Length: 248
Image (tube, rainbow, N blue to C red; front, side, top):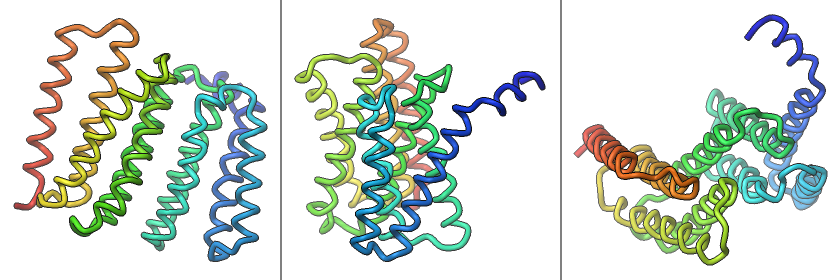
């Protein structure tokens, strides 16, 4: 990036507006958590996010699930895992980046919008998997956390398919539901495997990202045998890596 391009970017009003919205979103969530989820704080947080969502006039309808799930991810992580010190700073920073991506996509700010959305969606999937696998301490938690994981995965996959141009309510539900069901089954099986919550979350995220790429390629009409074999080979190699990195 040249000095002229950097200067133009720093004087871009949209950039500063997006930065302000992202800071406001993280600050509002921090206040809700800081006040111990007091009803007044929760109501204020809901009003703030509803206002920010309704003010978006670009592609907010395509990103409604990200708008909904991202605040929930922040709140649940802060409430159940309660990161402290450096980990709390990491949570705030990552949340800021994700909010910036959501607001930027809604305002058509990014040139490579499909690439940015792919990173956003993958980051949300990985984050939620880490959260669910961290809380899962054994098979007895499956019936409590399993339905929540299925619903979260379903909506995130449904959104990514819509964003990349997939149409048809039944087809959307079928593809998103099938991949979410596979995620749910692996979530249950992983409770009996010595993978650890990070490896288990990474493994299922790898599968969904590769499967998602296959579906998106099918939508764009670029799916062929060579690409399919490449994805399968990559999945097998990463499977070996994940299992080799686990303590047996």
